[in-house]
Length: 147
Length: 234
Length: 50
Image (cartoon, each protein chain N blue to C red):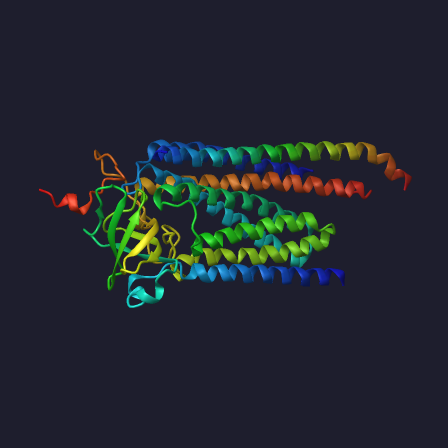
């Protein structure tokens, strides 16, 4: 009898634990929103902590003269959202690559990111022979256009 | 007695195989393999990250088997197997999270984030740390074994969830590179980087089984001590 | 911290933890073995009493 009571108690504790994790999981289930989902919701989402995920639009990545402010656009293929970030982005953050930005939408419709995370593909290949690897080899688009 | 000797012998063979593959694995992972084109040297952490989680999954699968067998036949042997595998599994899960974190900082830009895959892996660790605590808290041997078996089976069910999480939800973690039905491993990982990974997976599988065999021997000896203290001839 | 710094940190922690766990298992094995043989040598006359 006591063992049955113990098992019931254990199941209740486990159920409570799973309920907590479930609450956390609901947040994890919508880990980020896409630019398309955000489109038209800018005013409503203003001031709310959000994660936006997508690809950095090729050629959109620009670095301000202070060297620490980055401006770029995130896209999911259908919509585009402008992002501003002040800080040091991860090594793998680059033009045309996947990224998740954490932050809030400002009054001007620009997403102000406090954290930038690089999302990368599940693909691995050796570095080309003779070419030294340089993670920060991306050149800001503004500089690239220079002759 | 002869049976115990034989068991011990096969345990030693596992140890020798583990050591052999570990040495070759370390050489290929740290020296021989070329750096990844995109991630650079940091990608070498993959050669222990994936093997660690494979070892952890294997251990928790053994917990699952041992737990089912125990609930069915009520033999102490199966409970010792489950209990031992849970301990080794917790070690490898913790190592997986630590390695992932050290890899995440330079690649993603953060040590940790609450995406579905990371959250569910943390849950897996929590469940089996809970399992070990539960086992040490319950004095009654049989009751502890039954409760443990139930938690062990539930905990194992988290693994398919972890594996599918990257398909079912949006995550920061990338989809699997090797264990997937739609693509072959070498489509995602080029051979010069794939075979060092395979050697290290084999090394970690042998290592986890060897550690498990040692842990089982500890469990069996403790069981005999209990038998002696009860005055029986166990 | 450079790329290799992260790699060596990860490998260092992992192998340190694995070696420590291996040693702790050996230690538990030795302790349990000693206790068992003590019990067996001390316990045999006790059994006859019963």
